[in-house]
Length: 109
Image (tube, rainbow, N blue to C red):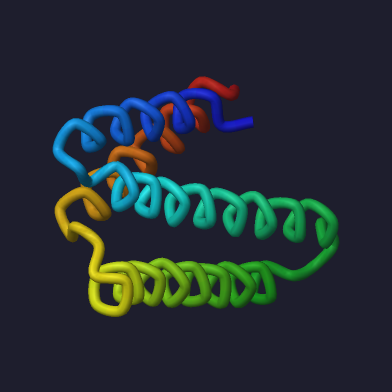
């Protein structure tokens, strides 16, 4: 459970709500959580396929990175251009959420 990530996202939503951009911050946080779900899915797949070769493992990693970046960039573009959300709030809450994800991973061990 990404506790630090969720706390940081909620703080960014609260902050941007004062500037009437809370929905944009929420959207950025959801993108961050989507990336977290995709990373955890990839880690579970790697653990389940512990007997695969190193080359296959690298291939799975490349596919995972390309898929995650495609999803994240696509969601950002949809939020900014199609939904016309506040770009700064989307990006800042996304980046802060990703920093929270990294803190959770470091403190997990």
